[in-house]
Length: 169
Image 1 (cartoon, one colour):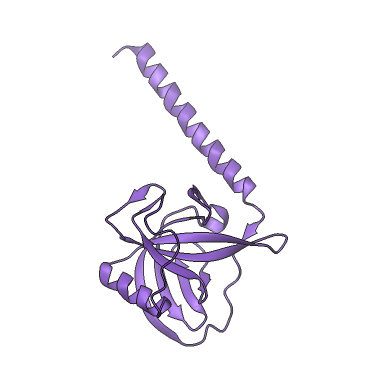
Image 2: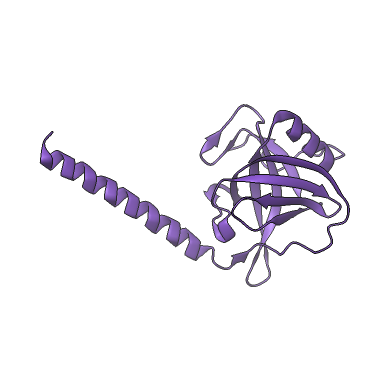
């Protein structure tokens, strides 16, 4: 191999990694005023518990923009517990968050960089809080086993109301 070619390829790889790190930090700075509301001490009675993968959290009106605040930018194993107050999401490596009972629930076939079969992702809509107190709607996508997905959706939307974005890009 030509040493000049190897040096050029290595330089391009280093530049690409630096650009990705810069972009991630810039996104984090832009979202620093967003916070996950603390989970209330009393969640009431608990019901269904399912395990799966938190794939991504995006802004509800910008499904191609990842939320990175409070560690939401990373995929993680997650346990979802249906409670009287909503769905408690406990994720590996991050603080838990609560999707309120009034939140939206639906399915999708894609989330950012993850494409699956039709309706293969479970999408829960909830809100982050901005420093000024304003609610910022977001959607978290989960990869669950099919039987767990059906049970979770039946538990959180008993009247079978559809929601977040479905199959829309």
